[in-house]
Length: 273
Image (cartoon, rainbow, N blue to C red; front, side, top):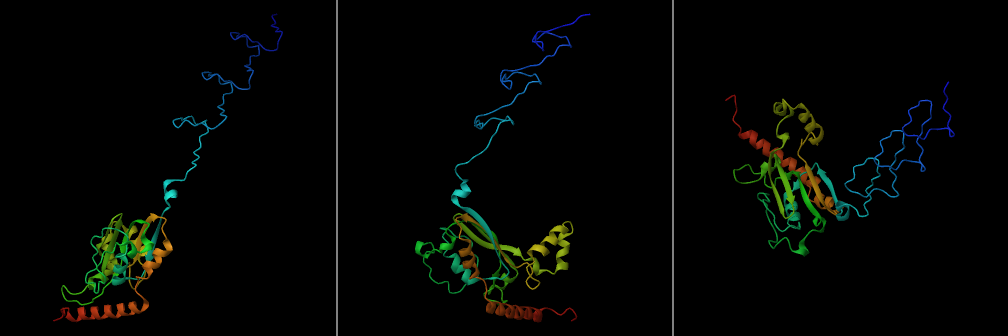
């Protein structure tokens, strides 16, 4: 009979392999601080008296917080954006007058056709003539609907084509342009539209759901995105709203449109003759 008695309850001999002995690893401190220790029975934790400040540290056990004492550039500059929408056309002359007060040094392709009574031809960029609502605008773009000013159907005389033409508004920094962007979908009936979306039925449904503002005017609308620093959204909206056709002007719009369509129908060849 062999018995192994130890004066202490546990064996401290690291090379001891006797399974009857109790072997534990006690540290004078509560945790093992040896960085190369791989003994799984040891407790290894990474305690930081403060958070880890090494920007390249990838140790997931470290606490890394990003406490920015300063705000982001967007916050500091007050960069915001919003979408201006309306289902009424712009009065072309009023909009042109407003844009001539837009505080940008260069304007390109301000294609408003026959705009009468252009008014003061002095530089629209003089500080005293600038509209304060747009001084913080850095970028704006989208589609707009312009009301015709002369409904004559004579070639080269009038801008009736504006009724069916979507205008693309593009402004970035010092450059501003409004150019033709093609026909509104509403120039076609919904049935006539469908063949254009044979392979994209979802887009057809999206247009009818999101872009179709009314059964009368279809997708004719204003949809402009404004991005800038410390924008006065309310003032911009008010300035653009003042350029929209009034109820009286829309009554005239409808009357002129009916007369124009009647004139076209009257001159169309009769297929039965």
